[in-house]
Amino acid sequence: MHCKVCQMELPSDQDVCPNCHPSEQYASATELQSPEETQTLPHLSTDEPEGQAPLPLESYHTVPAAVLSEPIAAVSPLAYTDPTQYPLPSAQPPVRPTAKPLNVFLPLLIAIIIIGSLLLIENTGVIYYAAVAHPAEVNHTNAALGTISAQATTRAQELSSAQRQINLSNKQTNDAIAKLDAAPQTLYSSMTSIPAIINDPLQQNTYLWDIYQDRYGNACGFSNGAYHISTRQNNVFVPCQTPIIPSVGNFALQIQMNILSGDEGGIIFHADINNDRLYKLSFGVDGDYSLFTYVDNVGDHAKKVQSGHAYDFHSGAGQMNQIMLISQNNTFFIYANQQLVTEIHDTTYTNGYIALFAEEEKNTTEVAFSNLQLW
Image 1 (cartoon, helix red, strand yellow):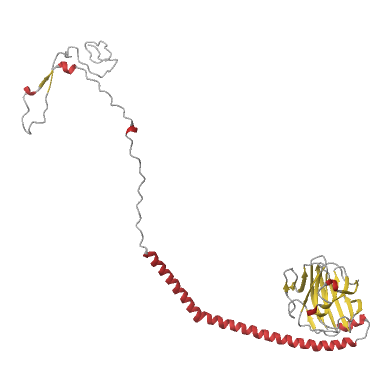
Image 2 (cartoon, one colour):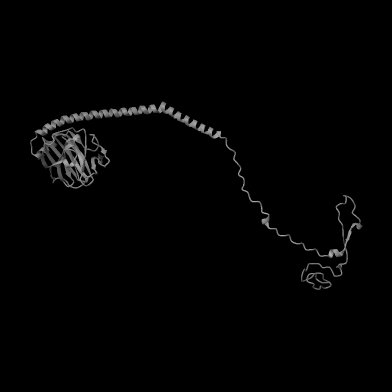
């Protein structure tokens, strides 16, 4: 007997090839049928009625062994089909479901409801304001205005009374000054021993001093417990005054002056404001003084009456100096820190208003005034 795989001859007592398949069973050569032998296969039929006895053996066909031994024809593989000849259907985008349109009247209805609610709220507020809040505000405002009006009336009466008192006192002072006949230094002591008509610390606007600032930066106002006058224009002086001080002829004025920065400051007197006619007494930061008469608002038309140096003046920016001016029958006595600077006689103007000023020649100037006294 031989192995069907490797054709190795097997011993007579073995039917398993030890080289190929040890577990495979082989039939003996004598048991193999020859190709000429025939095999019979049963013929199965599905036409037999249910329950019928199987067909007799004669119904089985005998298949010749030669037919069984014929080799099976090789099946040719399927022909290759190009997939591009039968393209797949192109993918279509998913269809978005169409939203059902809203009722067009619903937004309109909502808008009408909202507007109606707002109008109702507004009308309620208007009704409340008209019926409750506004009358209360009106009453409160009327009360406040009444208080302000009463205060203003009282203030006006006080100022009117003060101005009448100033006029009366000034007349008395004017007469007293006119009759004074003493040496200039004695004149100073005599004047300061008399009670002043006006004592204004210039810490607040008690006497209605000018408060303003123009487009050039020139200004008058109260700051840090003093009355400040500043100018930012070359060759310009800025006057500031109060309507409480009347037009005077004979008077005495004493004030503290501090040139914080810049060039000059001083006193204007016997001024006709409407026609720009005045005297201007000026002290520079360096201690120089000058007296000019102005005939109009053109600086070149001004006339210098006198100038010089005040040796008792504290020169330098930020220095406090006390200036005193006594006008007696058109003779002007000028003092710095209680010491006589000069005595000038001029008859250009005999009376007028008083003001304070700051003047810039080349540098931005600011002057602080305080503790004004007027006799």
